[in-house]
Every structure is written in structure tokens, then in C-alpha cells.
Length: 264
Image (tube, rainbow, N blue to C red; front, top):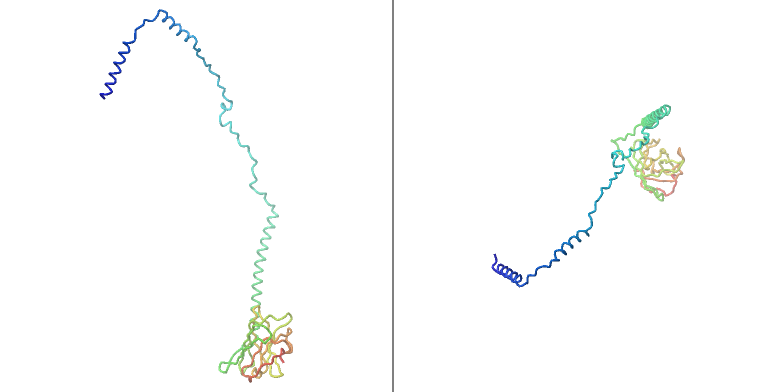
């Protein structure tokens, strides 16, 4: 233990002894005991009596006595939705089947007809080509040709290529970018020599302005100086139409074509 603490404790005990010895001892009076017990009895009588708590009856709600399952309202039966559609009458079903079969049949026959039409067109073209004599160029002899250009003032970008065999009365014309003729008109190929003109046939162009013409004439092509393409009524006409394209026959003597819009 700490010596200082022990010393202080010993001093404190000595002071207590000194205080008890210095206080004079007085004997209590005879009434002190009576007054003390009277005060105790008075305090005891004035204390409130303990309250007795009577147990109160516990009221249990009726809902608590009923099983929980009974408190849950059963879902009301909803009217069942009509999951099945009303069946169509047999007559409607038969009509629908008939219409579907008719559409399929029509589609099939339309395809067949279109195929037959295309085949007929090809056969007709083959027949036209077969009805004509083959355009044969004799390689043993010189091949003549002429490039034809647009006439001044036409404003078109067409071009034509003409070729033939010098000893033949047959030739071939290939045309590009020629505008579609006016309604009721067609194109006509002319060979011109001075005042004389000879028609080599009429032709039309496709949507791109292209055309090929295989033609026959009664005189050799080398007998003419100019080749011209004019417009003309359907079936051809005299060489009085507007000139669209012209060119010089290769073997002709050098000369310039006239600038008139007539093929004569």
C-alpha cells in the first residue's frame, strides 16, 4: 500500500476519535421514545393503501376467432372469356377454299400464258430472221463501211454504222441513241446519188434509241454517194423527211453533203 495514503487514513481515524471524545454525551428524554414511535405510526397510517388491479376481461374480436382462411374473400368466379371463336359456317369455309384455289389456278395459268407469249415472240423473231437470207460478208473481198453522224441543227448525239460488201446488194445498219420518232412516224434509210434516191427500208428504235437493220437494194451500194436517215410516215415515203443522221459512202468521190433537210 501507499505510505502516504496509510498516514492520511490514520490521521482521519484519530480525528474521528477526538471528535467523539469532545462531544458531550446527553441522555435522551423519556418522551423521545414515545414521540419517535408515534411519528412512525402516523407515517404508516397516512401511506396510501395498495391498489388492487382487477383483471379486465379480454375482448377478443370475432375476426380473431375465425380462421384466417375465412377472412380471405374467395375470388369471385369471373365469366370465362371466350377463348374459342365462333366456328365459321361450312358455306363460308367452302367459299374461302374455292377462292384460294381460283387464285392459285389463275396465277399458274397467267405464268403459263406469259411464258407462251414470250416464246411466241421469240419464235416470230426467229421466223423473221430465218425468212431473210443470211447477211454474209465475203472476207475474200474488201469490206466497205461508213460512219454516219448527226445532221447539223438536230441537237442529238446519235451515231450510225453502215457496212456492206462491194459486190453485194445487201448491207447492215446499226444505230445508237436515236430519239424515238414522233407518233405515227418511223425512220427510213436512204442512199442518195445526185437527184436519185433509193430507200433501203424503214425501222424503229428501242427504249435506248438503238436499232439494227439488214436491208436489200436492187443496185450496188457503191453506186451512191450519201447515206441518210430521215423520219417518215409509217410504211415509208418519198425522201422528203427531216435528216437526222448522214454519212459518206466510203468508195464515193470526195464531196460534201448538202445542208438541206431533204433527202433529195
